[in-house]
Image (cartoon, rainbow, N blue to C red):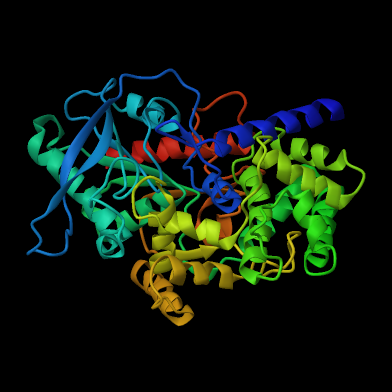
Length: 484
């Protein structure tokens, strides 16, 4: 079994490397900084389900550039997708809310939310968030154009979507509305109910972070916990000891050895804190990506891979190279290489610039090494993230300004006390995001050993008892919301 899991680990790592190493644009292959590659894994949206593709149509709706400025006449086209396979006139609208990712037909082709729409003769919509995917309100991502990127505006887009459908489609004139979202879009479901309660009968928020926080130290604590619980204490210790040794080596007389082992590019400066912080955060993000969306034997496979080496540093350096790929050249782990991606004002790099802008202005949620209760060392403090805000956007993003903006988000939406009804919240016990959301004490359902957005599939024999109970609870709640 151990050999099998080790092989699975090798293949999984190779697959990750191939998947993220290559980005094609007009036939050109790019060498993507490892910080970007690892962070992207955490913002790819809820897992796509392996389901038969339904007859999903893509449509567009006109939205105001600034819904809150009556003098602003400019508009843009928001993409959304439709699955009307089960719809009967007067049936409810089931809206799957998109977040910081490209929407995809699979989101409304199968799974528990689609099953609910089928039961209630509903029509399924999948809405795309402004500035992500093909929903581009402005021609580029220059800073002056990004003032139209805020969750309040995205929620107003959703409100207009519902109102427009009711006004223009006679069969939906009196339709009730059920929403679902995962991760950031789950937060949006909660906040939509707070701002527009008259437009939403009920909502399901899977893995919703509610508390905006600059220094999100708890994230890496849960990642470490998952490596121990699903892997082993030996695996946890290997990571912790290996990172600790690398921290000593790179700041001492063995920095050249570290650069060689990790195949770092020549421009990586071992005397530059920003480069060192970028590298160690990328190390942690590799494990975070495994844990956040772990399924089955994912974590044991990675742990078996790590434990197959004779010592801690050799294990981690091999993991690093495996993750990046076998394609020669060097690994760009520099701060400036990372910054270049965030400075690009085209839409070419998709989520990178708009999402980081939202974190600087609204949420923080910077996963750092600020806690001692995690195995990833102490070499990626929150200063790395706040410095990136200043360098990528504007020098006015001082630490105090960022904190003030994040405080404003909590004050406006209520933080851990959003004060909403008819919202069902679920979290995976081993989801690193769950500390920012509701727990059992607040009425949320916590699913043992589950990860981020792990509950979108249909009810099946492979579900744990707790997973099945949660899906059955959701099913009954939707029935109640639609009966009222």
